Image 1 (spheres, one colour):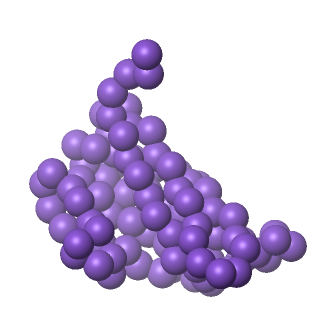
Image 2 (tube, rainbow, N blue to C red):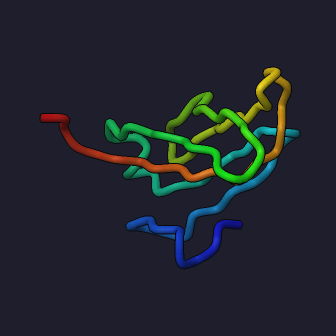
Length: 87
């Protein structure tokens, strides 16, 4: 579960569940994820990792994180969902 001070959603609490090593299901507001949002994921921590969005829709984003060899690896990450147009 994300820390409350970092989780922001217009409709409800954000929930994160680890589904397998390095894979997470992030439940966001359906209005954010289904209306043309851009989703960005960034790993953080002392150990180098890569994370990306596998899919999103219906209020859920599926995230996968791997180590530098490409093997699934658990890691903290930030997820940003942005709605709007790029200028």
